[in-house]
Length: 450
Image (cartoon, rainbow, N blue to C red; front, top):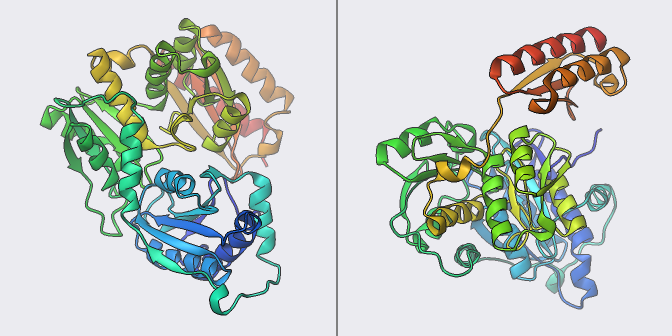
């Protein structure tokens, strides 16, 4: 059996890989590992639990809560709330742990369990391993008054919304700004519009009627066609696409053009640099960030620290360096002054506020970065372990890199879960990127064949 925890909690097909029994056992194990801090502090361990609207979240939430309470942890059920809302409320309510039931941008049949430690921070590998190890250990069950108590407090989403609004600092009115907000029929269908309307924006809601089955279905940050159309049809100033648990967002300008995570990160980096809030004049990004982003930051004398793909690695680098901004092309943006994790609604509010304070359109702000065409080719059925050592492949990569020079880039990434290698090429034109990527993909097939 492989490691249970993946890059973002425990995830799988609900009621298949991710069962009620496993959810209950994870609740017990997390109570023992993360609840100990509360016991040592002299108070009864306390947890907050939230979920996105998908149908399976109902029984998985019940199972996790049962596990926590059976292990002596008091639980507050938050109801449907974004993942960053659970992270924030874990810290705000001084809980010993937080739990979110969500599979983020994955389709409805999937679900996941994400844990947060005290302060609302994601778990490191060692803590996840400790929770997994506890799954196989016997434990003493409390009885009587020793069992945990469970109560609901869905009003805490209002506390989270107030936090989002206050994060903008000096109140910035969004009055006169029309925003189309695609809530992905997900966890932010209440919090997202509420935050924008509290700032005075005119909000056009789309995909904001979750029924438990339609989360991420042809909507949200992975399916943006309807948002592009709605922005143009409503004459809106911008559109925002959240994903199912609202820890990421992408944007659309007034003409219906996508503004991706790299461009959003560039806009915010320049704004924070201007305000003196970009610690160390550094922004953290992953190796998948577009080369155009690196060029834009270099022109602005902003250092880019790059990490492996995954917001957890961005968070680790930000924590180690004390940096205040980091993110991914996918739209995970972390503003550590205000959040311990990526927050799509928070990011969108700051992006809209930048438009208002500068009087510039989103298209104009995003033009600070020229996005180079990027081609990604997946090569399956190969020995990915040799991708970094095969002499013939390394020579081909070096030749392609020399051919592209400063105006392009080559990146080979072995998959973490499948027997495949991803070939990514950026260049000044799509045709050049496609030609080089196809050529390298063929070398990968020949050199790394099983």
